[in-house]
Structure formats: C-alpha cells, structure tokens
Length: 114
Image (cartoon, rainbow, N blue to C red):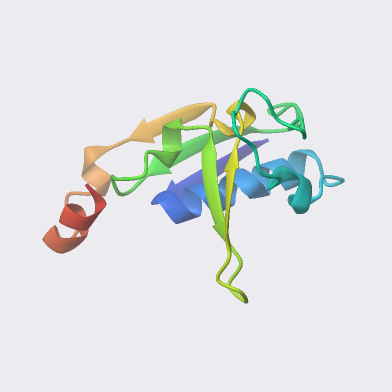
C-alpha cells in the first residue's frame, strides 16, 4: 500500500499521523505527543514505519519542508492546542516537488509560503 500526501504543510503533517495510525492502530496519539528535549532521546519510541505502507509526499507549496522532515504539528481544533511531533520514523519515503503544481499559485500565497 502507498499513502500519498498532497498539499502543503498541514496536509503533510496530517498524512504523517494517518500513516502511523494505519500502520499501528493500537498507537495512542497521547504517547506520540509526549514532550522531549532531544529527538534521539525520547521516553516513547515511535513504532517502525513502512511495513504496511510507504509514504509519498507531493508538495504543492513551499515553506514548511514537511515533505522531507521528521516533524509534524497537529492542532486540536476544539482547544487550539498544537502538538509538535518529532521522530525520524515520520520522514516520508519519497518526496515529489513538481514546479508545475505551483505555477498557478497566487503570488501572495507563494510569498507567505517561502
């Protein structure tokens, strides 16, 4: 199976969490979101990824770099609380950056995104 994340930073981050939940449905989000000081020294060990599905990230904006990083930020809409997640397991297997996907983007969105 393949999970394809298409969009900017927020859809990429959401797809990373969906990937974890697809691969490991027994995982609790609260454990993934535990605070840490160093990505290499965590209380909670992220599960091994890429067993059931590979993740391909296709970016349509520039700015966050989520398509090539081990980070994700998820916001609880009810509380506004942001949960930063970080683990090398969250890095997509492949990133596709196609200039044709951003050619018609409004100039303001391009400027805000980087």
